[in-house]
Length: 112
Image (cartoon, rainbow, N blue to C red; front, side, top):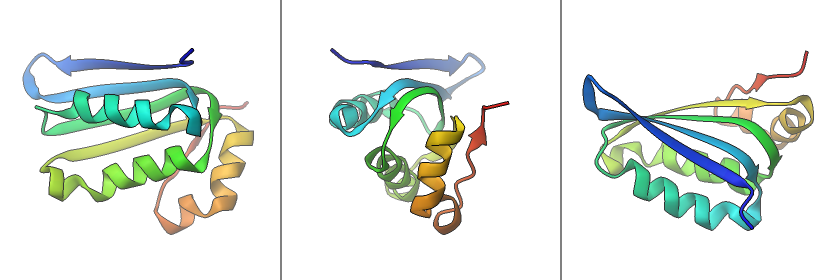
């Protein structure tokens, strides 16, 4: 059973902009499905805002997917912006892997 959710909303004033929110389990067991869903959802939009929040599980394969989308913007002819809100445990995982330093990702810590 899939334990992630992808919600898509569009900007009513601009049909070229969509917001995608990803929540839940972003672990490797769901990566292929998440990738396929994302590619399907971004088709037809020039501007995409991806928000990742309320994460139950994350691993580096998800971060590689996000990085791949970021690096593919020009090829896809799209502008993709990503906000990632993680608890301290997941933030530490991503930070220790070097993503925030090497690729410029800044996670938003949601712990108090």
